[in-house]
Amino acid sequence: MSLLNVEELSVTFTQRGKPDVRAVDGVSFSVDEGEVVGLVGESGCGKSVTSLALMGLLRGKNFKVGGKAVFDGVDLLSLKADRMRDLRGSAMAMIFQDPLSSLNPVIPLGVQVTEILQRHRGMRGEAARKEAASLLDRVGIPDPTRRLKEYPHQLSGGMRQRALIAMAVACAPRLLIADEPTTALDVTIQAQILELLSELVDTQGTALLMITHDLGVVAGLCDDINVLYAGRVVEAAARRPLFADPTHPYTVGLLGSIPRLDAPRGEKLTPIRGSVNDNIPWSKGCAFAPRCDHYTMDCLSGPPELRESTSGHRYRCANPITNATNAEATT
Image (cartoon, rainbow, N blue to C red):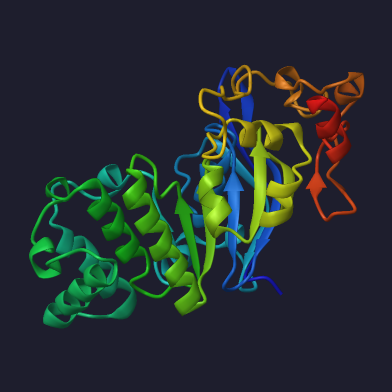
């Protein structure tokens, strides 16, 4: 049985006098212990809203959440707030996208780290401070004792991100959700952060849900990949099959937008035309159709079902890309 099993998760935002917005529309996936699963897509496709719903961090009354998210036998979506607070930070934790806005700017880093140790591990005083310094040292922050006395703005972007990781792993969570953890970091720091996350998975058996728009990140880290578009999974497969033989035109477009080191000098990228806002409702057809170079009238004949190919890909497309299609396109 999977550690986390998400079934038909939906998140709808409502506003008086305006149409409802379905940010997440029937997303299903699972994560096993010691497994790294990726949620990939452009900004606005529903990745972060999915993570916030799983962590119980959506605020206000203008949203509706449906489906199931069973974590270790418990449906997260039906838990009361106090029970969710007990799980959040201990059994499951999250690394947020922007460390500068996630950390409190007017509170020293040490207070923010020890607060987790006090809340979930019952540590106090000097014992909590020593453990906090040990956590910072573990994630590669130099001179951790001094850093505990500093404020977030006194740390570099890489150090702030490492501090967030230290806070997330303070209680050895069974599930770790990383929402764009390498955004705005240079490539050297990105590599260090990804290596650190991979080490945590290997040494602790932590299940990692990696949320990113960067296929280069998932290529070196994830076991299984779910590609999201307009709130739905449009393709899901293991890492190697997905990169070797992408099936959905959106996945092909994402891969074609990535610079390649082995590409001839001066070769232009092939971007996906339009924006994520250029879509149609799933009830009328494939939401990606207005941006797709391979669409046919079949793509507008109703909501596409999630199919499974002989190679193990699950895809939501009436006109999928095959090796034969790629061969025709290059001749």
